[in-house]
Length: 272
Image (cartoon, rainbow, N blue to C red; front, side, top):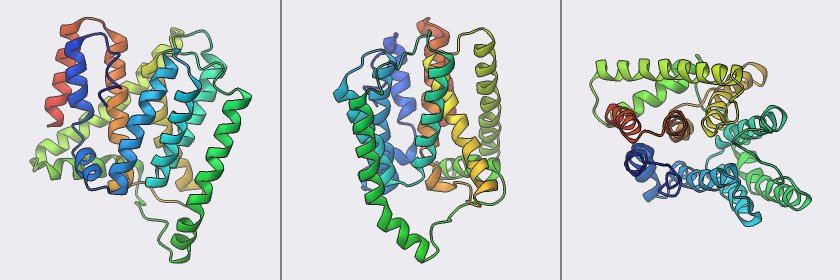
């Protein structure tokens, strides 16, 4: 996580961003216990570090492979990361189509060598996942989750368990829930405005797109494939993904240290 924020412009913001990214109460606790949820978050941090390097045109075959390996290990640790992987692929293809001349350039990532390595990695991952998924299907344990809607089952579930673990008062938790909903609306507005102004290819827009696409995929899978919404710890990866999108948005919007510090600390204190 320290390497993820290392390229931010302001030293003040780096400190605030590091605290925000690690404010997820489950990240350190579950990772230190070697729980699958915590391990998946740890591997995602590695994945995002190398993904940001690729976005900065710091392309390297080894870094690309490490990015894929970290993502595969994260999926093996927590099956629900598959939603993120699918969203990542969709948003990447979108960028290839409409954002070729922007700040992000993924060119030369999918060379023959890169595609071959990606295919082998995918095959190995499916090999590892086959047996545990087969047993989960056999004992009817695969479909764990909610059946109400994306807000109650996924978003409110994450807010409740995060806030409850911090012994937050009920009224504060409800305000926290409203803040998340408002921020999601604002993130959608940012995407629309950026697209209208032809400034789509910003790093923040990429992560916002992946976050929103992950939620959309859950809704689509619920209605078309009869799966259930991610709840509780199965959806934990959405917390650092949401935080990273907010952090990158603040970084893209302004280079003024005090503006960045004030914005970051405001969100951080609301977290805690």
